[in-house]
Amino acid sequence: MATKVLKRKSFVTDPVDPAVTPPPTASETTFLTKPKLSSKSRKREMPEGLWTKCPKCDALIYDKELDDNLKVCSKCQHHFPIGARERIHSLVETCSFEEIDAQMESVDILKFTGAASYAAKLAAYRKKSSLLQDAVVTGLGKIGNHRVALGVMDFAFLGGSMGSVVGEKLTRLIEAGTDRGIPVIIISTSGGARMYEGMFSLMQMAKTCGALGYHAKQKLPYISVLTNPTYAGVIASFATVGDLILAEPEAMIGFAGPRVIKDTTQAELPEGFQTSEFLQQYGLIDAIVPRQEMKNRLIYFLDFMTSGRQVA
Image 1 (cartoon, rainbow, N blue to C red):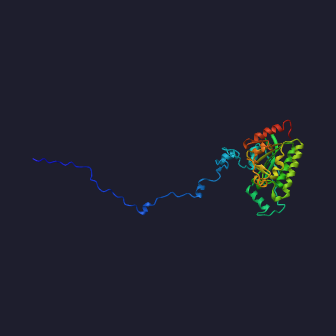
Image 2: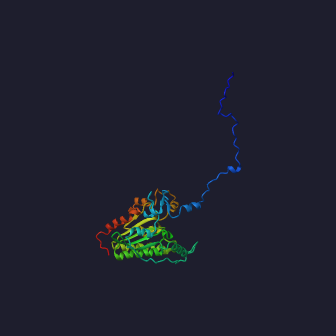
Image 3: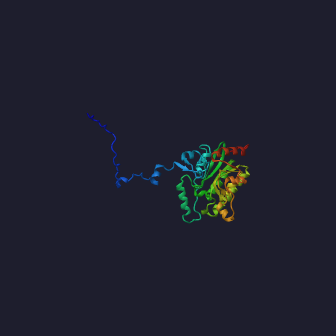
């Protein structure tokens, strides 16, 4: 008897032709891309006035940190420009500064005309900075225990140029220091004499130095502090006749700019020419003092220069 053989069911499917995926349609090939942010959008994401890029080391510095450090980069010690009011605040004792000749203003004596009149420029700069009437702030204050006559120039006002008002305010400051028997300190930053006033601005060189001559006859100290930049008529007059001449690091100091000197002499200038470090090496500057140390160093020098003298 023939036996019936049961055929085992196979779970393996027979091979078939591979499935063919149909080509995508045109609508399916379009990819969604993230829209590019415009430069305006990025500016909105990063509010202005919060960060400053250091021009020397390219570090981004939080503005509040920069202000707390007296506008000095904490990474490379680059000294940013600082206003006259800020500098005074960093040096004098609280509420001790009494400004003098605050309302004295320049006038357009020569009726200077050019791309813009001198009067228009003065009005524009006063409107831009309501705290300044001209390029210098003068007054009497205390640094440590020392009563001083303090003048601070501001480069933000017409490049710190010295016109009739700047020269007059500094001369009156020096005379006030002489009358009271106290030291004079002038912190300079300037592009030189103010060209809009012609020879009247050049006369300020002799006038300020004359006042300092009378101050010296009374054997009273005069400390000159040079900051970046200090040039031309200012460096050729009161800025370089101090009993003690200090400077901030890497400040540019000279009578004419390096490019003008190079073009005139047709000679290669030495490395670091006209920096405060170069001038200290050759004897013009007595000491280079970082901004954060300026107040303590001034107190130290004043202690030495006024020892034994009774100050009114």
